[in-house]
Each structure stands twice: as C-alpha cells, then as structure tokens.
Image (cartoon, rainbow, N blue to C red; front, top):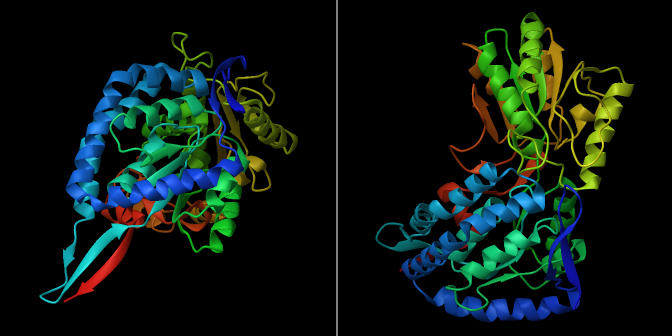
Length: 443
C-alpha cells in the first residue's frame, strides 16, 4: 500500500505516514459512504446532533496531541495550535446546536412546510494552514445535516486530520465520516466521484478545476478560494491601533492566513508616522522553531511556498520598492519579519496573495485612488478600513464579502467571499443550510 509521508517544515525530517487513497480505491469509499448515509439520515436531527456532540467529547482526550501535531506538521507555535484545537473542541456543543436550529423545518402557513433535508455524500477538501479548524467548519454542518462526509485533508498536514477523524469515529457510525489521503490526484478522484457536494477551502486555481469537474454532475459547491485583503489607513485613523492591527494581521500564522492583511494603502499625510511605528513593532517579532521561547513567526510550510514569497519580494526589489525591515532573500525555512514600502500596482506583492510574514505598504494622495487599487483584484474575501467619521463611507465602497472598520474582518456573520474569493459560504444559519436540500411540502 502506498504511503503519504508528513514532513517537519523546519528540517524536512519525516514525522509519520498515512495510507494513500488511490483513484482506483475511491468508488469503494463512496459506495460505503452512500450506504452509511441512508441510516444516518434516517435518524432524527436531534439524534444526529447528540451523536456528533458525543463524538466531539472524545477529542478532549487528544487535545494536547492534536496541538502538538499542528505545531510539528506546519510549524505553528504551540500556543496558537492549542487555541485552534481548543476552539474546535469547546465550541462543538454550541456549534451543533446552532446548526440543528438552522435546519429545523419551517411552517409556511396552514398548508405548507419547508424542510432542510440531507444532500447525500459531501466531500470536504481542507487546507494546511488551519488543518483542524478549517476541516471542522465544513464537515460539522454536513454531518449534522444528515450527510456522510469524505474528508480529503492537505497532504502537508495528514497526521492532524487522521487523528481527528479516528477519534470522532470512536463514536460515529461506521463510514459516516471517512478520510482519504493523497495529493491532487486523490482530490480529483474524489471530486469526480458519485458524490452530491464539494466543500472546499484552498487556492483559486484549484477551485476553478473543482468547479469545472463538478459541472457535469451539477454537484453543489461551497468554496472559499483565498484572498488578497487590502487595508486602507485614512488620515483620521488612530495610528497606533492601525499599526497594531497591520502588523499583527500581516504576521499572524506567519502570514499564512486567508484573511491576512496583504496590501496596505496609507494616506500620505500620516504615512511617515505609520511606517516608523510599523517597523518598530515588526522588529519585536522573531522567526524560529515553534518550540523556541519568544518565537512568534514559524517556518514557511514547505520549500515551494517559501520560494513563492521570495519571488514576490525579489520582484518588489527589482521594481523599486524600499525595504524598511528585512530583505528580499532568506534561507529556508524562514522568512524574517519584513516591511516593504513603495508598492506599486505592477508588483506581485500587490497582485497576488503572498502567504508570508510581509507588511506591504503603499501611499496615496486621494481616497479614490486607494479604493480603486484596493478593489483592483480578482479576490474579494476581506477588507479593512481604519479611519474616523468617513471610514464607513469608504468601507461601503470595498468589494469584499467581509468588510470591517477599525477591526479585523470576519467573525460576525457567515464566512463569505466576493468575486473570485468565494462560491457559496458557510457559517451562521444561512451557511449551515447550504449543506442541505430544501424541500417544500404542501398539504
């Protein structure tokens, strides 16, 4: 049986192996998922909710182990990894209640009822940057809705997902939740299989392939496809708060976060102060191994991603950007805290998602220019405006699914992207219902 090996991003030493699900094996996986789904769907909504809660209670026995695996597989410091695990485990009871409430049948007067029925088999394809939380956000509503789930986690973090699924399966009925491991070929075979829905978090390029493959079977899709989130700092902003957010958002999870701040447009009148304070704060960050004291920027997940970040920094350096902190070349596996100013629209730092610990700054004279450049992207996941009385008017012009004023985007409603950052959405009642089939009963 072929094996998928997980590697430590710091030194590329093997951490463990999991069996690969080859394309030829996928039909048997889906057949067992279909059989399991029928009996799972036959349970009441309350019974499924109770069973899922019981399954998640088992995770308390492996919380430390899951956090350690997150740190080892992707380099996230143990404190942040523990938050990810803790949030997944501790919020499960509330989350399942919210999902079950959203899926309750609704009266349509004396003569009708609207129901939220299971779809069938749902494929969940999850990323490596939040290997537990992202998988959980998609598979939990799918399960409570009465679907069976086949999870295909990132090949960068298979051990986290494997332990997660094995622990839940100590309680869940057989084959209601299955895991498949492998590279893009495994993912393609899952999408092409006889399933009913694909829930995906990952790159824009992969999302386009999934959408094309799903079209022939008209499979339901919920996809979050990354972002290139802009931040506008107006002249009336609280500069200290804007600086704190800018650096924290750009460096969080080593910049490997879909809502990380990728592009900052700051008013020329406050730009000198803003940049000086950004550099002073960024100097306090330290890159290194996840288990080393005072380290808050870990390794880049793999050499390919490391090279991508360097290519953007080198492009910016070649095209005239100024490095206020750091440089355009770093040895594997780290990117030190980097602050670059003088970003222009022709630079890759402005055009593409970076996924590295880089603060990329550009100055503007007119707000209209900042808004135009902020919106000049195929992405539209999150956007943030720091400013005073006029900030709301600027925020209203931002082309993003989640827009925030003087704080981070996301968290108050569904997780939703605009333009090419999303297709469908998840979270809140409206998002939970996307994992179900609406049925209207007239009587």
